[in-house]
Image (cartoon, rainbow, N blue to C red):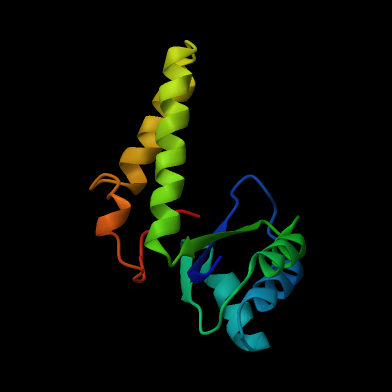
Amino acid sequence: MKYSSITFSRILDQELNKIHAIKGIRSFVSMGLKESKDLVEDLVNGPCNIKLTHEIINADVVLGQNHLDGSGVRAQFIVTNNKIRNAIGRQIEGTATWSTIAGQYDLAKELITLLSKYFPEGIVPDADVEETEESNGLA
C-alpha cells in the first residue's frame, strides 16, 4: 500500500518520551536529528503533517510503529490510492449494515459516524475513481 503523508500526533494520556519519539519519526521520514527534535517539540501545539518524499510499504509501517510504541506519539498514514480508500469505505459500510441487522446499534452508530467524517461526499463507485492523491484519506 502506498501512502502520501503521515500525521504525527501526541497521545495525551501517555508521557512523551522524546528520544523514542525522535527515533520513531526518523524511521518513517528522511529527517535530520534537529528537524525531528523540532517536530517532537511542535507536537505540544497539535498534530504535524509530513508529506512523504518516498514510498512507505506496510513492513516499514510496522517497524516504525514499533519504534513509536511507548513514545507518546501516534502516526496516522494517509492513503494515496482512491480505490483502496473506497474499498475501506465499502467495508465499513457493510459492517455497519450487518451490525444493525445483528442489533449492535452502538457499533453501527460509531461506524456511520466514521463514514460521515472520512467520506462526507459518499463512496464513489469504482468506475468514477481516479488513482490520484487524496489529502484527507483514511489511515
